[in-house]
Length: 351
Image 1 (cartoon, rainbow, N blue to C red):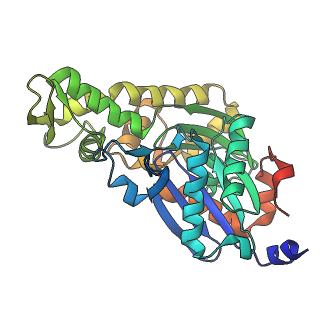
Image 2: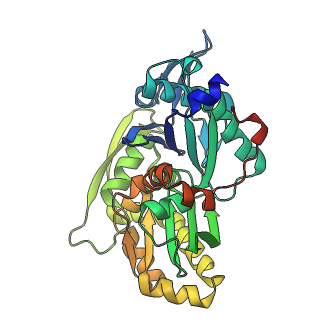
Image 3: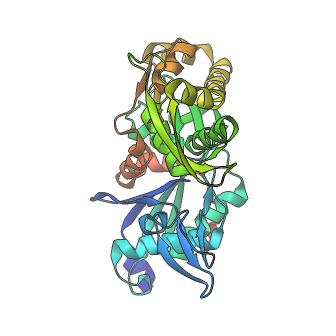
């Protein structure tokens, strides 16, 4: 009875649980948490010592007794216990009080399109274990479309490509539903690995992911630059074992990224091939919308447009489209009910 009374005053939280970053919003306050999905664990004490930005600073610099955990892989939970503790840390950071003595919050979480029932249950259980009272699941790509202000309720086709850190999702949306879609396990982190592998194969140089990401951001995929770009690449020489720095050209970076970029373009084409012609006509007129961190890669819109012969635009603030859509759903309960996914774990919702 007390719990039911308190739940009338419970807060509503939105969560974009990403491979690279976890973003949270609070009803009436907007985005309040935006930190890396990273946890540092002290193995000697079996204790979490840092989460988010503090844990990211330790990556590549940690001694053996500290494990750096990445609890989400390709958009799904790979380590349940660590994910639960990470969410609990963020919840405590939001409220600065013990949930045992307050109303448990209602939580809306975005999940990938192709998750299994087991993976869906893991998300719900992690949120409930961290202190949530009710958990609502929505498709990330639908939330991203809402956040990008696409007319998801209309009887017209909208195409959105969410280029995340661990996965790429492509969907055609009409009448509040997803008509056709494709999920690709190639995304921002894979582009970093492409550059790392290229440095190893071409220059016998081992570089870190942070250096690879910096190079990716500086150069991008745009081959129509007025002046050639060269960037410094620092790492360890695999032959001598000593530090070494070389200058790498923009064309070499694009060569390293080429295979993954082509896979994303092929996936976009394959979705268009199975889309009803009426919706394809709408998309040809309105264009493709890109969101997610990968949408900020230089020239990505131009190269997709060139290969698909369809206009491409980058959503406003593409990295926050999903959480903005979830934030909108915190207030629009009618739309939430219409796009809500069935729970995999109804009996464990705390009343």
